[in-house]
Image: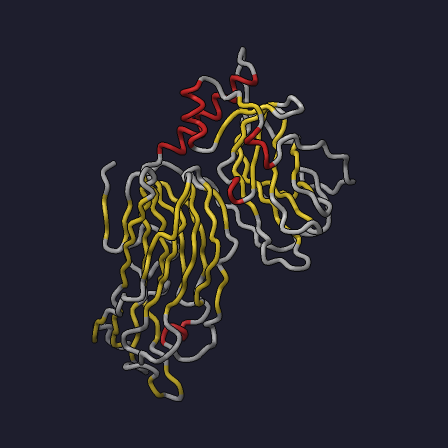
Length: 399
């Protein structure tokens, strides 16, 4: 498909997408459930053989050329000191998490923020286990060969939680075909996942804000206009919901990532604000706010990942500049070529609606959706409805 661009929106050919799974850093509950979500007594758990040091275990990925290509993207097939073999995904090792999968189990390992910290392990929307303090690994023996899962390792917060993190890990479970050995199946899976990760030439991250209604009454206080126009006038909205195809918005920021070079190109735009006569419906005036405070930049990069900072900011051009309630928000986003993403930090004012998504070759992963809290916030008519929404800790996967 040829690359194409719209005003304020850039979509280029890429290859990835999965379901998004989000869990905040909160305790998920004390009831232990089985994979079927039915209450169960705490079973004796098999011990995980693959920890954070799994990348040092014996490499059995295959030929030298295959091993080099696979390991470039953070995948390998390794045998633990106990003699068990699995596909190891070390692409998040620098962040403190590793996964390993064989046709018979999935091992998860992570770096704890405190020796007293307890963790909840979640697969999809099912709580698999509530782990005792000090746990840094978990083995899932209910994983089905050939399945793909999104795991989350969620800390139950106690004490100083400054370093606490929820880890999100995508895992594909190897499945041997008829006449195929487990080792051959694992080598094939490692190669396929590495090939898929390497194939993505570019990825586009987009943060859009928009007004859902078609028209929004101009705010007044005691029959007095808050902005240039008041009673009898309406502001034009964008007349749509959470639709990445729409080209109407208040603000939009795009980050185009070229994976080979780790280059990040930023594109920003602000939609024009229209004022209409409420009775006749005729356009009265049109202005576009300054976009000087809109920013997209690369913070850093490494093996298979890029860190991006985005700032979205725009005032209503018909309202006084000193009013404090403009569209406003900022975030730090880590995205990996292997299909994982995470919002490391960030927030935004709760007006208008906000939509963050990842675009990949015609496929879209929704990262974040938030409906507007209060229409008057955009006009700067007070603090009501302009509280901050916290973006920190959202994570998931795409392909």
